[in-house]
Length: 161
Image (tube, rainbow, N blue to C red; front, side, top):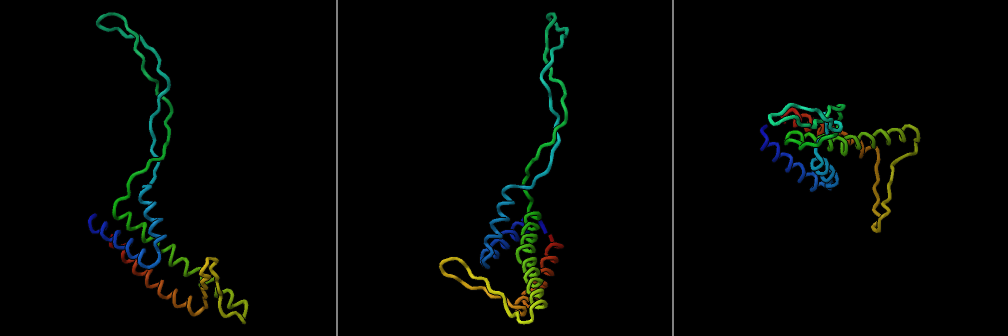
């Protein structure tokens, strides 16, 4: 895939995230892209100048030259290239969707094994609309299976970039 195709893929994936109520993931990826990737760069430093005397054409003259100091390491930010931007989205999707589904499944599996009367877990939204989200083991099994397909697709996409 060339840089133009990767840039189009990045923009397309960002749109898909926003269309599927994952705008917060797209926003985080975008913030990372804007910040750039960090790496450490070593630079030479200099101490205060020291005077040396040199013989010039018009006579003696003092010249101040800096002295070499210790090497210092500084963080430097550079732009991500398009394939790296696509990689950021793939990683974010894996963390936000797949890892979350795996945690939900493990959590509910634990409760089902420990509490035979357990049927579902309900989360109540504290906002004004008071929405209820209910999860049962069947729901998380279905979600986990869909996430396995998503993981396969993301892995195939990662090999293409």
